[in-house]
Structure formats: C-alpha cells, structure tokens
Image 1 (tube, rainbow, N blue to C red):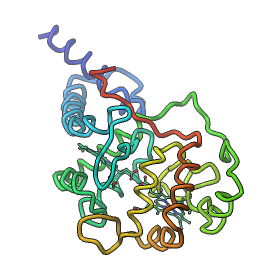
Image 2 (cartoon, rainbow, N blue to C red; image 1 turned 135 degrees about the horizontal axis):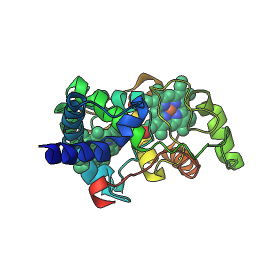
Image 3 (cartoon, rainbow, N blue to C red; image 1 turned 180 degrees about the vertical axis):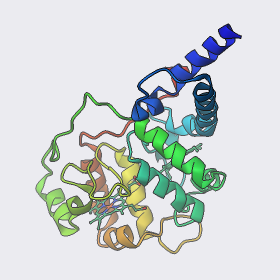
Length: 233
Ligand code: HEC
Ligand code: HEC
C-alpha cells in the first residue's frame, strides 16, 4: 500500500508540476490531497490528449481552409484560450475541427485546459522586450498605424491590454494570415469568424496587406510555443 501510494505520489508530482507551481504548495500534500491532485492530473491529461495530436506537434499543418501551421497555444493567456474555445463552441468561429472539439468541452474543462496551456508555456527565465524586437519596414509601419494594432495587442504584440485579447508575437505567420482573413468572412456559415472588433479592422485591409502584417508579427519574439506532450519529450 505504501509502495502504491509512493508510486501514485511520484506520478502526481511528475504530472502536475505545471499546475502545482502556480499554487505553490508549501509542504507535501496529504494522502487526500494527493488523491485529489492525481484525479485532476489524470483528467487534465485525458482532456488534452486529443489536443496534443495537433497542438503538441511542432510544425503540424492543418489543411482547411488552406494549408497553414496549427497555432501555438502554450504560453497564450488562459483568458484568451478560454474565450477562443467558447467562440468555437458557440459557432462564432466556424473552423469545423475546432468547433467539434470545443463542442465536447464543458465550461469547467475549458477553464482547466486554458490554465494548463498558459502554464505549459511559461518560462520565468525569459523576459520579453517591452517593445517589438524588430522595427517594421515603412509599408508595414503604416499598416500598423492605420489600425492602431499596438493599442490592443501591446507594444511588443505579446502584452495585450486585456488578458482576453490574444498575444500574437511569434505566432506562426501563416496561421495569423488565415486568422486575419477569417475575420473578413463574418457571414459565411462554414468558414470565418464573427468578431465585432477584428471584423471591422480586417476589412480595412487587402489580403496582401494582411499577409504583410502577419509576416511581421509572426517574425517577432514572443512567448507562444508548441510544447510536445510530456510522453514524447
Ligand atoms: C485535428 C487538429 C486539432 C485538434 C485535435 C485540436 N485543435 Fe485546436 N486548432 C486546430 C486548428 C487547425 C486551429 C486553427 C483554427 C482556425 O483557423 O480558427 C486551432 C485553433 C485552436 C485555438 C485558437 C488559437 C488562437 O490563437 O486563437 C485554441 C485555443 C485551440 N485550438 C485549442 C485546442 C484544444 C484545447 C484542443 C483539445 C481539447 C484542440 N485545440 C484540439 C487544430 C486542432
Ligand atoms: C480594439 C482592439 C484591437 C485592435 C486595435 C486590434 N486587435 Fe487584433 N484582436 C483583438 C481581439 C479582441 C481579438 C480576439 C478576437 C476573437 O475573439 O476572435 C483579436 C484577434 C486578433 C488576431 C487573431 C489571433 C489568433 O490567435 O487567432 C490577430 C492575428 C490580430 N488580432 C491581429 C491584429 C492586427 C494585425 C491589428 C492591427 C491591424 C489588430 N489585431 C488590431 C483586438 C484588437
């Protein structure tokens, strides 16, 4: 029994580090706490098991509505991840795979998964520069100015004014381009995204301009990552 408990305990310690760090337990948990943690750990693993098949593989590509890399979600803010999942669930974002994934998640699942991915990308050793680490060329500078992108996404594009807004610095440029175009398609039942704020912004730009914006933002230093599943690390 003691041996079993020790084994369980080491699994708990091995598998909940990301979550446990945030709560910083001062001393070893009681058996009841360990059991509760294990249950939580097992369920978060089970909950993200499907996600890692796409979001946990570096360079993994999606093919709808065109070929682009699956977005990095580790290190994204939990509030934004939760908001994005809710948008898929409610159909305001119409990407079919993510809609069907999000449809299976309860509100509680969404909160737990969002916290998991925020913690997964955290690297206390890295401090991003307060402003973008590269200056845009004059054409991109004018586009950024036109829609005041930094006023919401932050001067380094990684510190949005509200945690429910996305960090976009260093996100895959091909995904950013697809996302920006999606906001223009706000009344198509099978593709696109309905969002009052980004819809109005994206429609001010041609696709070539959105591509230039996406290339610049994607080239910046950020704290978004693709973190492979711990089983494969
Ligand atoms: C079959 C591949 C696949 C699976 C499985 C999958 N995703 Fe996704 N995910 C995608 C793709 C592709 C997108 C981009 C969709 C779009 O263009 O809106 C995406 C988008 C997202 C976004 C929005 C990112 C952003 O920057 O706005 C979040 C959050 C997300 N997924 C979380 C999850 C979670 C959590 C799971 C597991 C419960 C999961 N995904 C499972 C492929 C997948
Ligand atoms: C008034 C605030 C505001 C401004 C200005 C703004 N954004 Fe956004 N942006 C948002 C919000 C809020 C979202 C999340 C929308 C959603 O839930 O789909 C978003 C989403 C995005 C996304 C999708 C990210 C993802 O991971 O899917 C991209 C890309 C983006 N913005 C780029 C830009 C660019 C480039 C500009 C300037 C041309 C800009 N934004 C200006 C608020 C803003």
